[in-house]
Length: 598
Image (cartoon, rainbow, N blue to C red; front, side, top):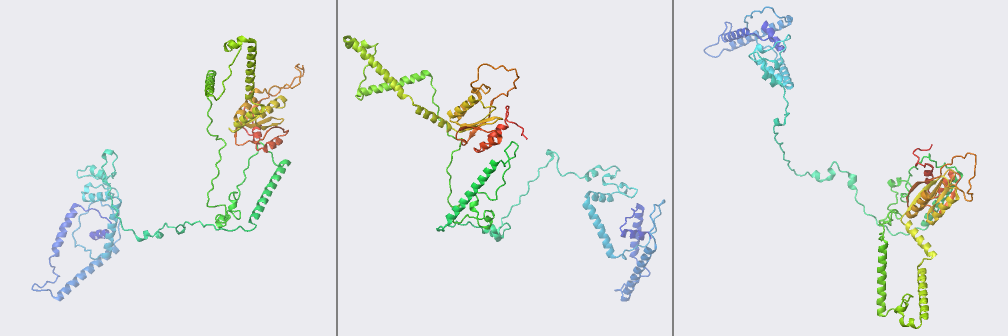
């Protein structure tokens, strides 16, 4: 019964206890006795015929007997498994003696299909354990092969960790434990690193090109739209007569457009005069106009004045009256306003001594040239230059014969030479017209070097003497600009050449005494007044801006009295320089204001 229970448990996959050495020896003797008895004939078995083959009835009797034995064993096994309950296993206090040997129980009654499934389950579990942790699988196989004393038992029959197993002497096997620990597959020190073999280079074999590669239409990246586009040849324009009334219609359209623009400008001027437009004060924000629907340079190429004509194909690009032609227009290059070319060479500066030396050499050359002409007979010889000092030496005999006559003649020649000298000097002098022309030419040459502008802010410009100096010097220097007189402050704008602007800056910032408030015609005696006078504000002139511009904005130099700020700004707006007034209004004595006036 014990053996049958153990076999049943093994079939169900349960592990039984390890047998002792005495039990193993008893089983060996038992199996040997059984094997020996199995070869001896029993009394019930039929005795074979020694003289020949068994008879048929004997064979049938043996087969029937074996079948009966197998059926009896199966019936007994099934009854025992159904009736006997499974009792809990308890640890016996006393080791029971080994059971008496009984007849072996064959497993021929187990279903082969069930046995095959049990074996497959065991193999599947074993392969899973080996895949997850090969070290544990190898350790478990080594532990099962070792002696039972080397195994560590737990309270729940748990085996010890493979790293804690003992060797045959009963000590901890350190080498086995070290072998079970996974090691890194790389070296941490450069010296311990092994030279890795070079990677095997696989030779690429060139195969014949497929026919699909020759056809680009079969490629996944082929675009049929791009492939069909081909360069178009420009169609040559044919000779075509202009239809009657075409240019008349264009002229009427241009005149209507010009009339509309003029009307808009007049309306804008009337609005400005009426004062409807807000003043350009310092705190006024500059608002940019929104971009137009169509740019002015694209209008002649669009039929309906919209960019949708390009997609619709109505653009005037290849039409007869299109502005786009096959010719390339090269505009005339314009010199930049600030580029005046290389400066002219400066004359050599000589000292007085060097100038006199050059003059002597030049006059000596002229004198030698004149003497050569006289020798060749091209010029008559000069009369001897007789003076009172060399009279007796030059005119020896004549001076002795009639000295009075010779003296009168010498004095007459001296007077003639003096008159000739003065006449020559007067002829070399420039006339008034020539002087003015020379001055004008100098100012024009100075103006060709560039147009420079200076803007001055003056606190009080009511004194006639100051007005005269500002006006007369600007006109004499050929400067243009204007003077705005306002109760709050005055602004002087001048524009001209660099040399004239430099002289005028010295006049405004150094030469004129702006603190002189004496009036013309006032007595020199001081008026004694007991009443205290208010502290007058210091009058001064400040340069608020200077720079170079492309063209002049003014045609002359004039004074303009503007009692209000709007009138002053409107006057400067005519010349497109109203920003000078905004700059002057924000300018202080220390410099331009950093904060915006609100």
